[in-house]
Length: 76
Image 1 (cartoon, rainbow, N blue to C red):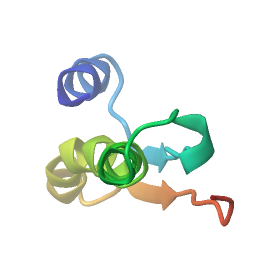
Image 2 (cartoon, helix red, strand yellow):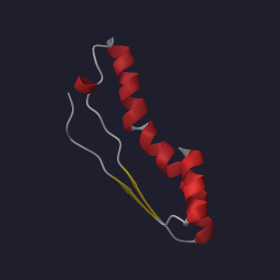
Image 3 (cartoon, rainbow, N blue to C red):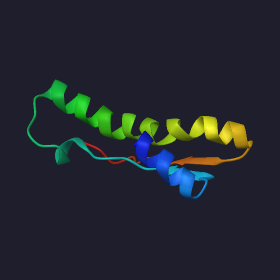
């Protein structure tokens, strides 16, 4: 994700990131509970972090930039 964002930012500086990653437990199969939790965190939490983090320093350097995180109350 960082490589993709860095390349895109070189073409056109990014000033807004909307991070929206989400799946519910029912969509990731019949894994054991522990694996399901790890998969959910990897997608829902770390997916958002991996989208935002590459831009933080760029936003600070430019002294501008907006971050929006979209979440869902859906889940099972």
